[in-house]
Length: 386
View 1 (cartoon, rainbow, N blue to C red):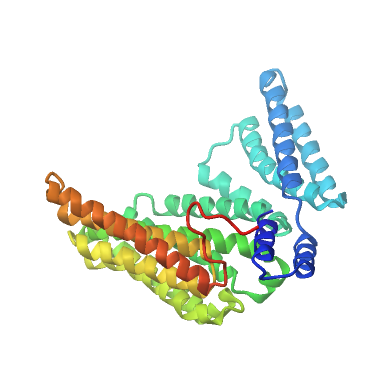
View 2: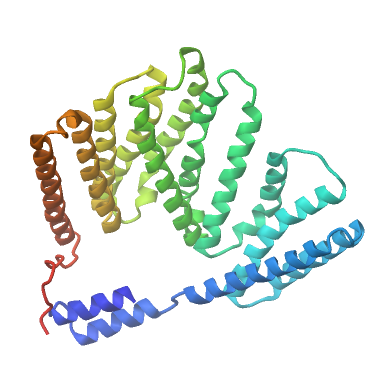
């Protein structure tokens, strides 16, 4: 285990004694989830499902429609009964995941037997509605992530169906789709959800923050070229207003998202407002061919994310943010001084800039690690004292 290696390292450096290390190991091991068992159980459930599908598919035309539905109903009842009766958490989670996918397959089977017409979004909507209560009973982070992805796909398909054919439908879609990342964050601010489903909150927050960060990063490309014409920008207003309302709500409830890290409230608000501004202002204002502004917007966004990571003691996110800032600075060099690259002077300056960014990043990583209470990373090739 990673924490076990760290404890051994800290003990060698004299930061903790053997008794303290033993207590920490006992605490961390208490109630630890059997991740491998969950993975094997999930793989087993998937294998069984694929085997059943293979058998059925090989004899599909010979099976009467009524028998297909009867077997489908029997399987559904059997899985549901097993979910209710099992006392093993890992098995229960595997069965819930199996049932979640089985419902979608059953909808397709019913449509095939009765030759029902309809659009994909209708089937997906029925699937999400029928499994909503079931998925709220799940306890694992993996199932919560799968459920949120399913809900977001449902949201995207329904929005696409509702706005299809409307004037400026692409602008409306661009304005509304970010709500799929903001709404899970709002769910995470409710105390009842945090207490009842902490792993669901962790999954929703983790995926939503990731989507929000990368969506805002991608939106900086609109400073380079704006694809929306003047007559289409009106469709953005609806999404912008709704997103602004959700961001305002999240800023007001920011303390519930950061927990005990109260110093992270301000940077969290800055990240939210920055993502909102970057995502909506360029298309609304018709900004175009502003390469430097786009680059600065990207740097500002990830600087705010780095600030948030530092305040919340999230070292991995901090490393990612600083790496992306360094990479973007290097890209700016190629954008601004690209014409010099064919000369020796351009190559030398580009190499020096690359080395400078790498050196600065390495130095700041050590500083941040020290501030976050982690042992400073050792130099390459150095040995730990025995």
